[in-house]
Amino acid sequence: MITVIEWNAVYNCDCIEGMGMLADGSVDLAFADPPFNIGYKYDGYHDKLNDKDYWTWSEQWMAEVQRILKPDGTFWLAIGDEYAAELKIIATRKLGFACRNWVIWYYTFGVHCKQKFTRSHVHLFHFVKNANQFTFNDHEIRIPSARQRIYHDKRANPRGRLPDDTWVLRPQELGQEFGFDKDTWFVSRLCGTFRERVGWHGCQMPEAILERIINVSSRPNEKVFDPFLGSGTTAAVAKKLGRQFLGFELSKEYWELSQKRLNPAN
Image (cartoon, rainbow, N blue to C red):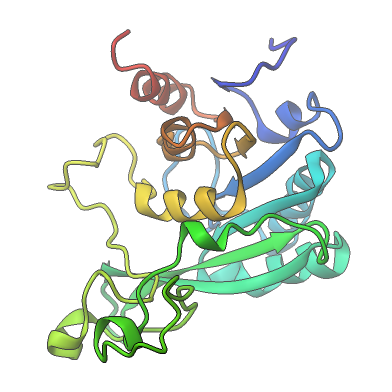
């Protein structure tokens, strides 16, 4: 049984139980990629609750996130189509979060469908605790604008521009006009042949997603928390970017492997 929670560590525990041990207003940034309730085979968690139970559980853990965030804290939520709208309503209308952005993360290697458009996106909600006071380090994520990169217009802002939160077509449908330097959230899912893939978690989040979120929504040495640690990406990126990190993971197997990812020399 866990009796003390320390930062720069990950714990094998239920996230609601673990967050109950954290002080009010102690976290700068929370990122959550919870179970989508679509029947995925997790180790130690049933991912097919009835709707009411899933909504109730989601409200419980998000309420704890709201409590432990600092007054100017930020909460990013990754969620699939099935419950995106409901969780946004719970977060904003029940828990008092302000939604700054509803970002679409577009990826290749989407889930092929036979009787509907192939799914190739995840919803990323950017919530803040206080709509008038929050961290947004725009200088960390600015990219060259079209005026700079294509037209070489001297009137262009030399600082570039902020990325969009828009839908994009698949790269093979855009020809030469689509590139990694574009102002979209185009990041591939991690396939089996990718070097970054750890190989033991089927829903591993790419580091590029967390790098953008952590850079824009926190500062060096601030506290980054993930209630559903999974493969450990949030903690690994937070550590790399000089933030303090904390993660909870219900699966003992995932927890043990994420510790090895964070401390490969051990």
